[in-house]
Amino acid sequence: MRWRGGFRRLARRHLVRQRMPGQLGLDGLNGFVAGMRTAFGAFVPAYLAGQGWTQAQIGLVLTAETVTSMLAQVPGGAIVDVTRRRRLLLGVAILGAAAAALALAAFPMQLPVLLALVLHALTGAIIAPGIAAVTVAMVGRRDLGERLGRNVQFASIGSGAGAALMGLAASAVSERAVFVMAALLAIPAIISLWSLHPRPLRRRVSAAPTDAVEPQGSVRALLADRRMQVFAACVVLFHFSSAALLAVAAAEITRRAGMKAGMLIAAFVIIPQVLVAVASPWVGRLAERIGRRPLLVVGFASLPLRAALFALVDDPYLLVPVQLLEGVAAAVFGVMLPLVAADLTRESGRFTLSLGMLGLAGTLGAALSTTVAGLIATGFGVDAAFWTLAASGLVAVTLVALAMPETRVGPARDRSKPWWRLS
Image (cartoon, rainbow, N blue to C red):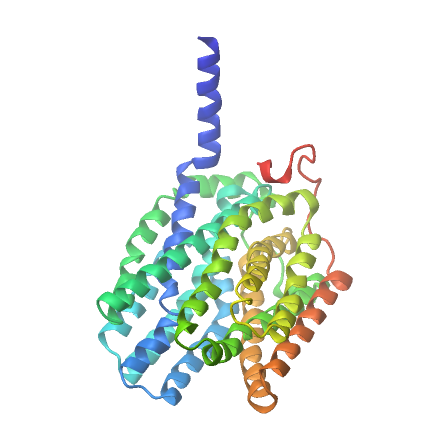
């Protein structure tokens, strides 16, 4: 009978450590928020086109959203840094995103749509660093890699499930149902957020100075940090190489595949999401074992390879497995971005401000990518655009390999265990 009691104690300890309410709340928060924000992707231009909008009108409001997002990234991170009520701020941002979704559904006119997309961009600048800050406070620095892997995993699951359900809603009901469903997802997101009891958050922050998220260092010192400068340049190049690739390929896939193009593009989106959901926790564990830099090299190396294969392979069906490379890049980058930011701000406490700066770098890279690749594809053909993106990816991986230092501090986790069993 003694072995039964020992087994129960072991199971109870494992449950408390791995499935405590805070961990489950973070899982739900990441999943539901990602599902809600999925509605503001490809569904928006399709919905507006169905409402009789011209391409110029759609482009105008989407550009306004992009510009607002760029301008709001750094202030959003700074606001999360200085506030002491992060859960409240995050809850208000989630409700703001839900209000933007309802406004899109109810008022598909120019001014309301413009204001709704601007509101969504402003809330996005709060939501991403807010979730990251709550994550650091919940788990501390030591287990941050694995927890960030779970964040990315559940965000990927939420995004994929949300896209599937919203697509069915659009087909079965109407395009407006997509945004109503997005607003409804705010309810379980808020419930998940409020399940993160504030007392553990305060105790974690006050008990371990290395886990503090209160700002202590100057913004000038953060900007002058050579490691931050190099990593920000890597972030710009990452998004420049990857953001426009599928957008440039979509028209060519439609031309070659005809009526089956929709199915192919859906596969192009779903396959990377599945890989991200599976691989992200392993990436987080492996980052604590071997460090950040080797994984960054692997993730960035997939960029030029993927772009080159898009240029060399003519059959769109053979390009479907190539999208696994996007999953590799997304899994690595999704975990490494906040993890490296946490490493670089361990002493200063400017964690969410650094996330805002890196978010600005990523948005800038993505905007340049779609603009430059679109111009090159129009003037010189899609293959020239693919090779340009491949060259950018090659510069990115070279910069990571030669200039980006290792940022993990402290001894590696237990190397005697296989990396997939690290906990």
